[in-house]
Amino acid sequence: MKTQEVTHSMVADQVREFYDKHPYPPPVTSLDKYRARWEDQAIRRADFHLFFPDRAYQADQAILVAGCGTSQAAKYALRQPEAHVVGIDVSQTSIQQTAALRRKYKLNNLELRQLPIERVGELERSFDRIVCTGVLHHLPDPDAGLNALRQVLKPDGAIHVMVYATYGRSGIYMLQDYARRLELGHTDQEIKELAATLMALPLDHPLARLLGESPDFQRKDALADALLNPVDRAYTVPQFLEFIERCGLTFGRWYRQAPYLPQCGALAATPHSARLNQLPKEEQYAAVELFRGTMVRHSLIAYRADGSLDGESIRFDNDNEEWLNYVPIRLPETIRVTQQLPPGAAAVLINRSHTYPDLYLPVDALKKKLYDAIDGQRTIDDIIGGSAEVERGQQTDLRRFFQTLWQYDQVVFETECNHLKSTDDEIR
Ligand SMILES: C[S@@+](CC[C@H](N)C(=O)[O-])C[C@H]1O[C@@H](n2cnc3c(N)ncnc32)[C@H](O)[C@@H]1O
Image (cartoon, rainbow, N blue to C red; front, side, top):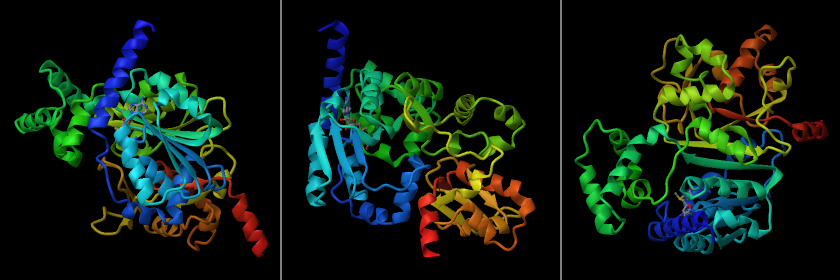
């Protein structure tokens, strides 16, 4: 073996040993609540069309959960009973925890293998959807991992990748460096002492906000995962996008996009709004990351660069009226607030997965009515047509409204609703 390969294999062993000892996320024994939530067909459709806007809903996908940890693969098998799910992980403890959930919930559609991502080709299978969240930044060679995943993605498949973000984690990297200098290991005693020491951290330390805000950090295993992990790197937005492209993938969308868009939130009302809007999309995302300053992870959906999908199927900026045929489907974590409203608003729309308080969307009475008419079945044209108050001359304003709903992660779209149309025709 060459020196670099030996080093990589030693590092990979350290990562495996770490996760055998500190499986993450902390093991769970009940997925009852999770199962109940995903029984809602609207949630499944929203999740599907987030990845595949221009395809009819398909329940029987082949899904790979790469670096599945203790429960993620079981969750996917539970929420999509008609799918076939394969979970792989290097950590034997994590696979055992997932196997216990498989037994408990009789998940016959779940297959588990103790296998490193870099060797995923050994499965001799390809997948409609690959999930790899919180893993690639722990690999000695993340490119080798993502390239291997790209090889087993079907040409019209989609991959969900989440990696750590550089700027928001600067406090974590300071404390990791601190721990290295003290040659801290990850025995229970050492973790306990680290937790006790962090109680004395200055209140204005860059890590202090994360420590205070994230309930995860109160836990021993989470603390070890964040501060004592043997391998952990992070990506800025440009680095992440380059990484994706280098590995033969093309950017589809951010998993939740509003935090990256200068058209959303506080930046949209600043004197820089017009200037930001003129930048290419990738530059906009990079600028917003720098402006926000505290993003701790980046999560995106990508497709094969040589495949049939890209992130361009949802268009509001061209002259044709395709957007009228889109079917809006609400994202499950959205809520509509009607109390303590800003002046002129009839409601405020919020996506509870957003962590930035400026990402709320006030709407007037007409738009509230249109929003309420979204049922996951009707096209925008139907929704607008069904509202007596809407005049045709308002189309530009309405187009912008539905685009804004999408940008703010209120809805996803099914853009090819031919199957719905034919069902309607049959009924008629
Ligand atoms: C932070 S956990 C994330 C688990 C899961 N993806 C989630 O989001 O809940 C990272 C997982 O990646 C696994 N892992 C690390 N390196 C790996 C590799 N080369 N191949 C497969 N799994 C790996 C670890 O064992 C651990 O279970």
